[in-house]
Image (cartoon, rainbow, N blue to C red; front, side, top):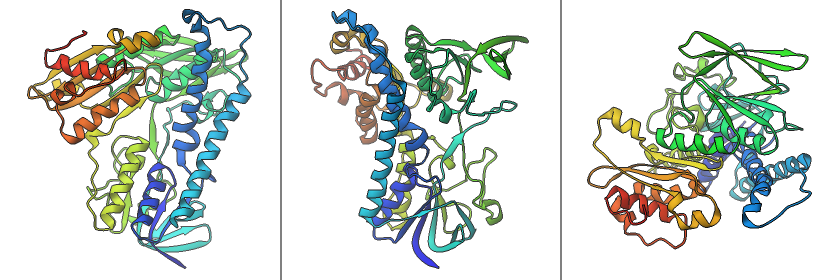
Length: 460
């Protein structure tokens, strides 16, 4: 029976990063993964393949807008097979990269599905291993909708939507969150009519409401159709496609919608089945998340959990930070994750990026705050590239401490980093406003939003 200092169950972003960091700290480490490929959901059927498709589809869609630049493109065609092959190659190369990192850092890769028969023991197939500590990093999977069967042929999860062999004539997306909007825009760019159905009366739940409205307006301009305040009741298959029955929320009224494919993107749920957690007595909350303390300890000594299977933002980079903090504390070091400064990004066009508190949350809490905004329409770099949709919004205390920042605009996922760093290091809106930014650059909009919060905007 092999013995380890730490066995990590799951080789997604949180799991493989935790394993490598633990090995760097001198631990004997193994990482167990049954998927057949390293990288978890993020790398195999999530973040990476979706961004590959977003990038490829954006380049194809851009061809129709080049006439404004005085460029005519004739005879352009789409090879969906080649597009998908590029996506698959990127995924394959990156999974091989993790295997290389394991070898470089001395992490043992154990292939198979793990269970925990007792504290300090891990079973994989017929083999058993012992460990001083066990770290659960099993991630999440698409959430199901009651009464709607996902067959990955007509009714798809995000996994199926990443592997279609043809653009549907009409794709209906259930859920106006990150996954639904990103994949909806991919297929809209590749020729599908896309209708997004959302139970709430807004898109992007959890994002600052004003920024979400800017995103919806921009996405509508780019071809997405929205039906808000509607709940999906049933999906019926017929000879000519699918018929969806929708409930108008609060209006006691039914509607029907015809589609070729349906993508169910209503969120994700933690994956913990098969581990034997119930028999061990590991506490799990009513939503299926493993309960942990500030050290990522479960209710059973020696068993820890991180990432999507514990409460908190279900984000790959959050899982990585969890993993590093957990193993550093196991090694006697200081580890900490400030979840208020974990950014989130929606990689649509335009991108939506957010960190910290929303204006709605500040109002609900009765917090006194100031607001600064700057529209990209007034940014010279945005005007020169034609990427003028959206704005930067900064929320701060009257004394200038940044409470939240939200961006709808091109490269928003990169621009938010400056504000995340400012929040992490305690820089104020005054500090950011007095930081010299390159000109012309999209980042000037961040500076101008901070100036606006202080009542000193120059170009607004």
